[in-house]
Image (cartoon, rainbow, N blue to C red; front, side):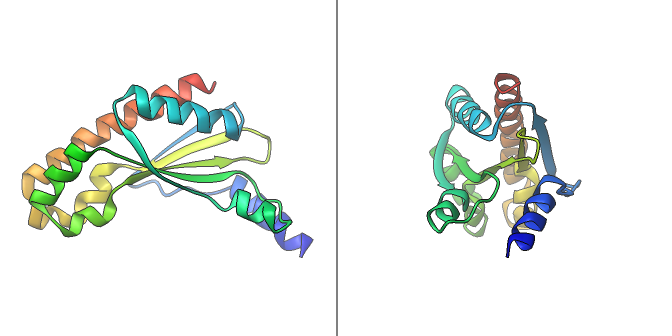
Length: 153
């Protein structure tokens, strides 16, 4: 069992992130520091955290130790309303998520799928207006990511 946990932890640290449609920002700070910087950056950019989930704390309650791992869902109601008016199915993608992971060396990584990539499957229905929402959100998510990365260095 210990070997499985060690292999899983090693695999997480050496994760090969998809290149298409993803942004991945490594930072030198800790997982907890990056998570706090992300929360502050979301608020500073006028967005809202609407969901958070991660296995780390639940695993600890079961006596398991795994690297920090948290998915943070971010969105805002005006984007939800605009998206719904264009494509009801596209709203399954909201909130769009940031992913904070802890690396073996104690540093952390912030990653996310770009909103335009997430919304791309719905462009046939939502058209140029939905594509515009995706591009707007790309800018917002980039700003959040850069702000969190700068604060966590």
